[in-house]
Length: 100
Image (tube, rainbow, N blue to C red; front, side):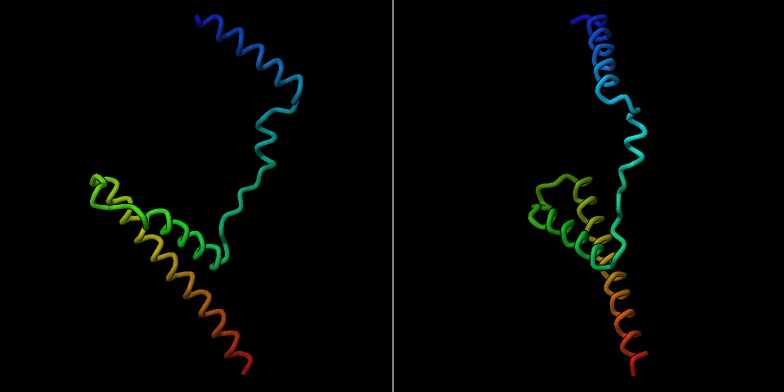
C-alpha cells in the first residue's frame, strides 16, 4: 500500500472513533487509576512474584547484561522485603507494647 492509502485509512478510522466515542481518548485515560502497592504485605507479594519470575532462570546461560538485571532484581526485592517486614514488625510490636 502506498502512503496515501494509509492516510485515507487513518482518516476513516479517526472518523469512526469520533462517531462511536466522541469523547477524546485523553479524557478517558485520566479516569483510569493506577494503584501502587502501598501496604507492606503488597510490596512483599510483589517482591515474591518478581523472585518467582527469575528463580527458574539459568544465570549461566544469560549474557552479562541480563545477569546484571537478575542480580539487580534480587537485590531490590531483598531490600524492599526487609523494609516491609521491618514496617510490619514495628507496627505490631508498637501496638503490643502500647496495649501493656
